[in-house]
Image 1 (cartoon, rainbow, N blue to C red):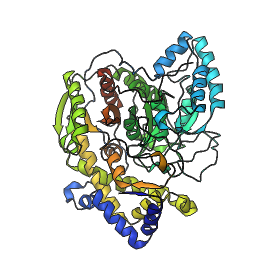
Image 2: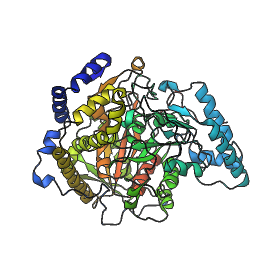
Image 3: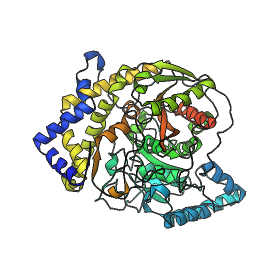
Image 4: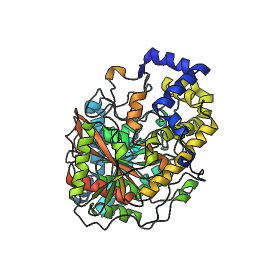
Length: 551
């Protein structure tokens, strides 16, 4: 059901009554099959886990693989590798590239996206960084893969001197410091020239917002761009940067990446430190990149995920793995020969043939190059959406408790309606869901003892309707929300790495395929993504307004 404007206001007011909240609860429990989850037998529950980290497999991960050539980039967007080569040859320089981005932004050259992907800009400080980077390239002493690379940051992470609004209407205080991984990116020479739009507190996966003019889908101005890392996905898809930062607590990297035909990965839970994340801590969310190519994702991870965050105690759960960056770069050439890919048949049956058929054809191309496709059954996987709603929702309710008390009337009607329903959830219901979550983790871990990866659709449908005339209009669409998150919650509630690649277009709109890997095994996910890119079925038609960066 879609509600807009006054009808949404009326629904929110009704939901904030005790009777209305109970009725809304009944609908949500029915739509997400939460009743079925809570009625599962005892064997569908496991003891509560002492921490939310992923369960680790016993066997050594990966497959023998090969040493293949890098995939061919799409050509109509610049990759970080292409920019580095141009800097090294003197063909262009970081200040010239940054100037081109500013010119395109000032000219409102956003194609079908219509609106800017950026909520605030920092070209002055980025220009200083670009000049310093140019000097290093002239001396032949670049700092690493992100030196001189333009990189926008999602508006939930602190950037010194800039506001962090978290997609809200009332936050405007300028940060006194950088978030941990933002500081790491800055020290690596990245040009952090902008913050990108997010949906409100990251709670809308479609890309809707009543508080700002969110950019639309780069292929169709009347469709949403996905969320909550909306602006980063659009900036990458328009070619305004080869890579950018997002976060993923329920699909917020993978959904907008898939909706705009680009690449994205949610790393293993707490792979990247979370100090300076305004969304707060949770058991599901982690920072990660969206990019033009798989290699761009590795460029980001090899910097942001390899420096410890001493102020984030959850980072202690991450194992000490040597030479992570080298492993991830090597994975780009591994191929899929010998890779065992699990196909959860019950999940794929939920997808319409128009998306399932081309997705399975893509997987069969991997099979032609040596991968083995294996049907698997994970009984509790069907309940991942219900577990996700209770886990993500209740943690968000707790994190926003003080915000609600301080300025709850400034939250959107959609979010207030959601929070009203969540307040009806009992502690017993929440903890019962957590016990089933623990059991699901065990089932997925056991499945990944036999296969290297799981392959799933990224979303149930293509991008949601979001006409321009609904700009900054209150909007709630529970059907669209479920469609976006149907297959993404699994990786969040298990803490596992998951990456999405483009598969094709349906009615002119992109859709994606995701690979879910074992705990701390981003390398296998990246290897499969890179080989999909090598086979070139990930190369979609050039969206309007997109072009490579050039001086």
